[in-house]
Length: 233
Image 1 (spheres, helix red, strand yellow):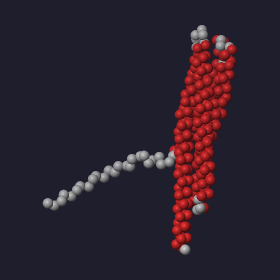
Image 2 (cartoon, one colour; image 1 turned 180 degrees about the vertical axis):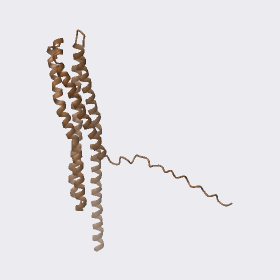
Image 3 (cartoon, helix red, strand yellow; image 1 turned 90 degrees about the vertical axis):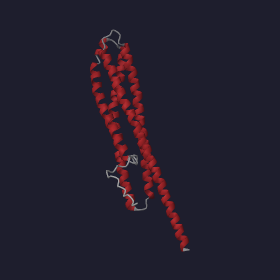
Image 4 (cartoon, helix red, strand yellow; image 1 turned 90 degrees about the horizontal axis):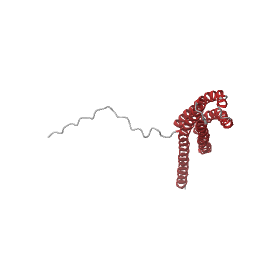
């Protein structure tokens, strides 16, 4: 009877270890999904920066143009403005995907804390989770700052589009030069906010990346091979 109980105890222990291992593996996979989405968000933010620059360049070209017909420059500005709005939506969506994957990861981590029997280890894991979650949330803080800077900038450019749509005269164009100057300053601030978001994505991605050094080859030693002693004939 004692042997049977001992066997059942060992079986229960092995099952618990297997369960924990499965949860750990799933947790690693969730962390990987979060880091992959971070990596995918960065180029979309870079494209947003690029499209902001293109749109502003087209607007400046329109204001500085000397030709009798400003419609080609105006059309270029409008097209780039619409592309900028579309790209901004894509960029923000990529960050939302990152947030969603992060939420899944941290909620699962919180639930899995219940499976840790040792209170000391459980407490350490809980502390690490809070630390990691606070780091992750900094991405959203940076992106919120970019959003707050971008939205009024977008509204101003959309208003310029509507304004010039009905007054694409030399006088009408000259009358919005101060708005264009302000847009240039706003764009510079938006670029800084987006750069800060990208930097935060890089930092958090590195902190959550699993086994990032496993692919590195082992360091070579500088020791010389030992000489083989010739055998006696």
